[in-house]
Each structure stands twice: as C-alpha cells, then as structure tokens.
Image 1 (tube, rainbow, N blue to C red):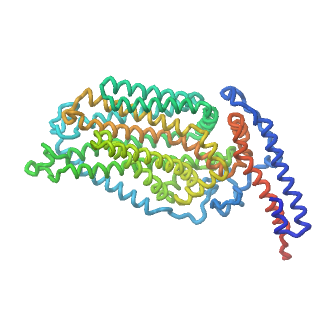
Image 2: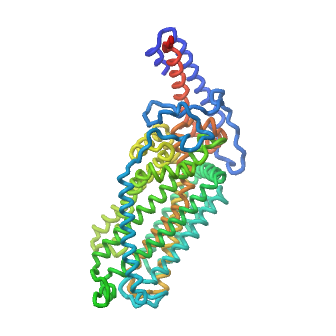
Image 3: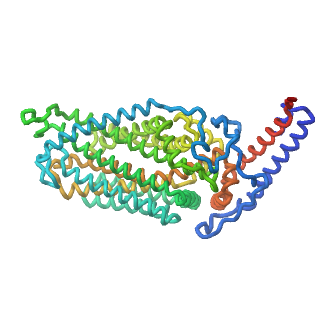
Length: 581
C-alpha cells in the first residue's frame, strides 16, 4: 500500500508519504496486537454479570466523528456530500440526505396498489353476498344450514385465531423486553415443548401423518438448539443492545404495536373475505348460486380456486409489505443511533417512515413481491400435500422436494431483503442497487461471519413459529370439537388449519420486526463504516470481543485500510500544486 505514494508524487513528497503510511500501518498493527492481547484469549464467561472492560482507544480514534464512510476501494454508492456533513443533531432527512431523490421501482408500487384495489373489489362483492344470505349461514357455532362450504362457524374460529395471535405476539415481545438475557433460552425451549405437545396431540387423535411430521419438527428443533448453545453469548449481547436502544426510543415499540394491530385488522378482513368467497361461489345447495332465489349464479369450483389464489397472493404481498415498511422505518432509528449515539438525528422515525412510504415505496413493494410469490408457491405445495397428495408417490415426493427448494430460496431472499431495506432506509437506493451494494459490502468487510454467529433472527422466527403453531392447533381442536356440517370427513381441515397458521405467522411477524430490525441495521452500519463502531461505541465493541474474539479479525483489516487510505489521500492533497490566485 505504501508504494502507491511513488506512483503519484514527486520523490521528496513520496518519501514523506512513505514514512507516514508505514507509520499508519505500524500503528494499526499495534492496535490489533493490543486487542489480541487484551481480548484474543478471552472466554465468553460471566457475560451476564461482568462489567465490560473499557477498550483503550488509540489517539487516532479519539477525535469526534466528523468524517463520512470512506471509500474502501469498492464502489458501494456512497452519497456525494457526506464529506461535508455530520450526523448528530440534524433532522434525519438532512443527516441522511439523498441527492436528487426519486421514486424508485415505482412500477412495483403501482402494481401493489392495483392488487390491493382488486382485493377490495373482491372483498366488497363477496361480503355483500354473505350479508344477503346471513340467515342461511347462521349466527353462531353450529346453527348454519350450510353443509357445502365455510360459514359463520369459520368466522368465529378466525376470531379466536386473531385474538390468540395478538395476545401471544404482544406477550412474546413483552417477554423479550423483560427477560432479555434469558430470552433466547426461553424461545428455544418453548418451541421444542410446543412441537412435542402438538405431535403428542396428533398421535392421541390417531392422526399418524401429522403426528410424525410434528415429531420430526421437534427432533430437528432439539438438534438445532443444542448446536446453537455456543453461539448464544454473542446473540444475547446483540439482542441486549437492540433492546437497550429501543428503550431509549419509545417510537420503536409504538411502531411495533401499531404494525401488529394493522396486521391483525387486515387478517380479520382477509378471513372474512375468505369465508365470503366460499359462501358466494361454492357450488352445491347454495342460495347465492340460485338465480331463481335472487342469487347471482356463476358458481363453480374453478371460480372459488381462482379467487382463493388471488386473495391469498394479495394477503401475502400486503402483509409482507407491511412488515418490510415497519422494518425500514425502525432501521432509520437505529441508523441515527449508530452514527451519533450521544446526539442522534431528530425525527428519525418520521423521516424514515416518510422515505419508506414515498421514494422507497416501490422498492419495498418489489422486495415484498418476490417473497410473496415464493410464499404462495410454498402454500400451494402444502395444500397439495395436506389434502392427501396426488395418489402418486413420485409426484408427492417431488412436491416435498420442491417445497424444500422454495424454502431455501425464500430464506436467501429474505436474508438479502433484511439488510437491503436497512441500507435503503438510510441511503434511499433502489431495490436491486441496495441488495447488490449491501451484499458485496457485507461479504467484503467480513460482517457475514458475525451475522452467521447471531441467533436472534432464527430465534425470533422460532417465536413466530410458536405463535403460528398455537393458532393452527386451536383451529384443529376447534374443528374437532364443534364438528361443523361442512367439514364432515375433515374435507376442510387442512385448508383451515393452514390459513390459521398463516394468520398467526404474519401477525406475530409484524410484532417482532422491530427487534430484528435493530440488529440488522447495526450489522449494515458496521459493514458500512466499522470505524464508527470502535470510535462511538467502544463499550459495545469491547463486549463483542469479550464474547466473540473473532470480531477483531472481521474488523481489523478494514480499520487498517481506513488509516492507510486517509494517509494516502492526505499526502496526495498536500502535494497537489496550489492555485496561485
């Protein structure tokens, strides 16, 4: 690196620069050696009680943070004016200003609005038909004359499901705030117990296939949890950091609560529309199909299937967009804290929400669309398998393999989306540009190793799965106890249980988004400028090294390149001919 000076400077200037750069290299190596000696052999012992050691910062890093994220040799799309601005104290829209802002990926946003409009039309028409046949559908558990499709009995069930999802989702987040250190242990054990209980109940009801499936899930959960034990200390540290920041910014939990309510309200609307589609178009002894009785006619199974596919896709897309909008909004809050913890940008929640709902609306819609398509395909595979399969063993096996492949693709896509949306919240880039820049940045800076060590994302997913399993189990028990006429022989059990699982998963997902968003944003910001982590958050950095010593390996090379780059640029600037005027 020091040879770069000889390429651009006169001999006398290059000699001075050579000495300066070598000093920077030696200084960075000394800092790294001090870190290695202080933390390198440390074990993650006593991380629940011990006070962190104060990291002794080099004089080079004690200056107030006034520099933007430097260019590390890769083009990650830094904004042009960062060299003249500070983050602290300014409004969010100025601290993270986007030059020449534009509405990115607007076509996806328009398409989402059109899909939502179509959902409104279908819902309005079918709910009107449901209301016109209210006496036929009944008003309680088993007083309906409907023996061919879903009725008011199903609406009562979905009401129970929504209440369960709301209560458990809110309780889960509350437990995370109260028992931060024990939260990961509680989540893992709770998920294992719930999976085993569900398997036992299915076996008790002589549902051997379902019982075997849940037993496999329970065994897999046990294996995963045991393999995760050594990674729990680092995960607890990151989770504690995210919760501590959220406690200082009350808007984080306000956004979480409002997002959960919005998800529950939409889920109630979705459930009512689902039942209304069956009531209006399911063939059979259906008064809605009898034109002589004032019905609209045009009933067929194909119409029911087509509308169910549409509203399911719309439901997935809208709820994914809602979760990602919450995520992007909260990322703005954590980004403002990361770059200026003692004097964060003002109006971070409003500024990030405004950007998410305007310039980034199309980009969030696009990322949500890709996930929604995969969600729909996986749901279709689940329905095909749970409805008794095709009768062809090879085809059923192919469905199972396809579902696994789709699950892996969806996991990778959601992984990229999480960090791309955090990046988007701060810098306002388009979807594909954000995804590309974020992925390259995380890989090049070595932050992917830290992400792989952090269990908070998987643990929160396990919590959402726990809520979804509870909702599915309640649906199964409800159908078994009430035994509605339309479900003779269990013809609708699989579909209703899957929709209950879907509603519980999506509602719980909206509640836990803010907790995950904080950690994702910290990783993105650390990849963007790790020097800020050492300089503005020395206590957090020292804790990270104490519980996971390899952190310094991930960050050290980047900090060294920062020092060398600054030395080279300073030498170049001093050696340029001055304007005599």
